[in-house]
Length: 237
Image 1 (cartoon, helix red, strand yellow):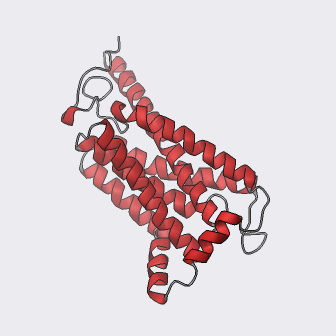
Image 2 (image 1 turned 60 degrees about the vertical axis):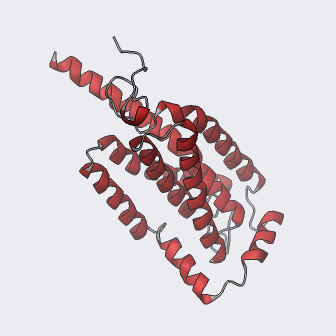
């Protein structure tokens, strides 16, 4: 029989079944679940609004006008930020995070880093041809922004793991996770708009894609790991 999820882990966090560290602490689920649902709705609504479009909307035009004219120094910052979403930069970030997780002996966290980033970017690639929004030509699918989705996802995962490791409470943990995701999404979103690579609404869609995918992925990682551990225990008996 599975024991009830009532024992507390290090830092006061419930760990699911007794003694099992989780990547999505139960105190955060009540906060992140509605955020994920709302983010998914935003992705769908924006995608429906800009299906087959190849021009900026009213919001896009106003944001673009505000960002336009950044000097060379800011452009270098934008290029450096953009690199974090490129294949090489993303691989470096993911590789470093996985290495840190393994050194800390948290294999679930390592799985979440890889699965979270992969599923988030994969979702943007599936959505792009479905929405069909383009920029700078018919071959450049724009919505949602994969760069923004990746960096947001990476920040969300890092914040989730930090919240669990340091035993943050429900409000503090949710604030850290949500704040980290928004900050990363805003930084990469600004870079994409400043470089002319995406419409501003593309970056909102990318950020919201990560906010929708990461909590679900973390829950799935925990459920799968729990079942594997239960199965291993039964086989050893």
